Image (cartoon, rainbow, N blue to C red; front, side, top):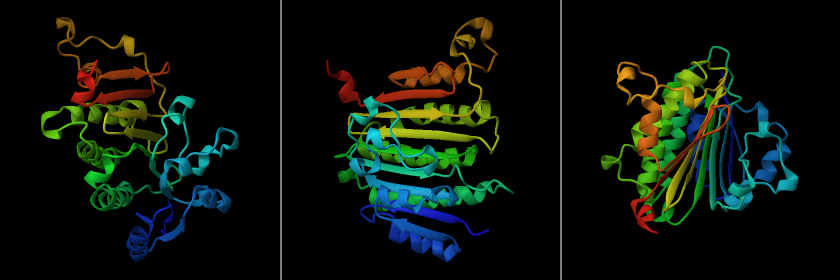
Length: 270
């Protein structure tokens, strides 16, 4: 099957190189230099994958000029988020990836190609330390995709200096959150999507994981520290996340988890 990929990149950090790679595979690739050009295509939903790498002011539309969510282009979740003034916005959206005879390995290879290129050639340490970037992923429920996304995010936060991966349990906490979304939230249903976002700066990393499951009441989870629950598996992941992260919040439905990890310098300041 010939995949259709849209790349929106205002500085050509990704589009030329990725176009060559995907064309060799036999994929159709369309490129634009701005969000406005992408919206005018009016065919965003026809692409299996949409990749955007834009300056923040170009990535997010004014509040009075919202575009439909199904465009797969970056969107602001709240006015508070809008006011944080992201310098860069990077997103991979695969919610329209055809699910007939779903090939998880094919999609994983596409994600790995994009993320490996960005990590190696775009995310230079001296550059990423100077910017605030919002990174988003929307994709079908698949554990292997979670793993390549997690690997990329860990490299990214280490380059910024949020954590030293060798001395941090951040990987374990994020892995728990990611797997829970696919396994317990969406129950491995590839027709349901997962959304992962990270807001990364030199001061902190904010992570959000959202699934399309029914959710749960976090207060109903047995406390694994209670001897009576010693042999119960439930609750341990939530406890790990709370112990590793500086802030943890669930939405009322229980299908959206927000986590904040601050640098040691930031935590030590009054």
